[in-house]
Image (cartoon, rainbow, N blue to C red; front, side, top):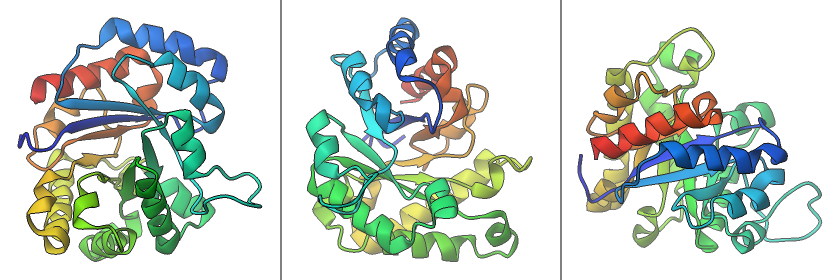
Length: 256
């Protein structure tokens, strides 16, 4: 793997677990993982868990991320959380444009772009999600959609800032459908993403971590992480159990 970019393993807890379970999870995880200076690890628990998560993972080298952020700086936006509030809490990474935010809550590319810019403005790292549905995949328009999502979401992101952006490829058609994305299919799209980044940012594209968000687990992590353009994973269900998540992290550590 090209060592000018980091391997990134992120856990997206979605709307799971309880605030009272975070500290015990952290202590359990610490028992299993080995350290590696070339692997970045973060967790994205629900908003109500962020303060205790920051405290629980303090001084461990594991970062705490948010699952979402408002595109607004502050004001009368009930139920929203701003980038400045997250940064003040100690959050380092923020997921933007997750497929569930796009499909369930109707987030448009323009909103995702505004969030990416706001995250960067407040010195955090965006984890920008892109990915195609089953319908798009079967119609042969995967590359067209991915390119469109990338170019829209990265509008206004400078060459200096692009290396702070993490791209997460989520093949929506392979999540909960019974269909599985192979390592070859995942690598093909991640390679295409790198090509789009090269069009936009030239050689800076080689410094961007591109991670895979399609049901990576302890069994398939080694094969996926061995692909040239897959620099890590955005883990859903497997991140909810410390031992299984640690296996993925340790696999990443040994693949560096």
